[in-house]
Amino acid sequence: MNQSKDDTGFDQMPDRYKGEGRETVDIMRDACNFIANREGWGDTSVTMKVSDLADLLFEAACLTHYLKYVTRIKDADTDPQKAQWWNQMRLHVWDEYPDPRSGRPNFTSYESKEFNAKKYNI
Image (cartoon, rainbow, N blue to C red; front, side):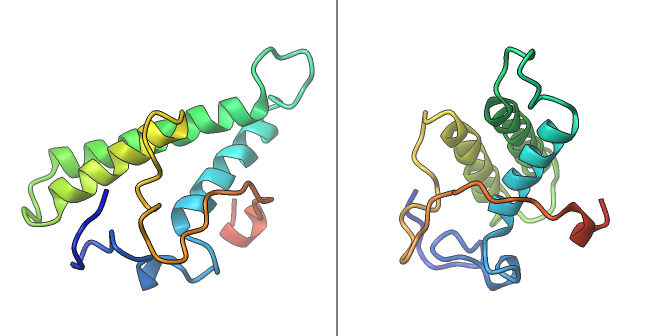
C-alpha cells in the first residue's frame, strides 16, 4: 500500500509508535507470542504451534483494530485508511498480502523477539 505523506503515518514509521526502538505493531505481535506461551501452547502435546497461535491472536488484534476504525464515526479523513491498513496487516499475517509497511524507507520485516511483560505491567 503506497500512501502519500499524510497524518496517518502510512509512508513512514510514525514517531509516536517507535519509542521502543521497534514499531508498536511488532511489539503487539510479540505480546501474542507471550500469551500463547503463557497459556501452555508451547507444550508438545498441543497440536498447534505456538507461533501459529500467536499469529492467530495477532490476526484477531488486527481485526479488532480494523473494526474500531470501520465502526466509529470520528475522523472521516484518516479512519477509512487506517481501517484498510489494519485489514491489510491482518491478511499479511498469513502471507495473503504484503506487509503494509513494506514500502517504507528502511523497512524491517517482523522478527519475533522476547516480550517483556513486566515492562508493561502484565
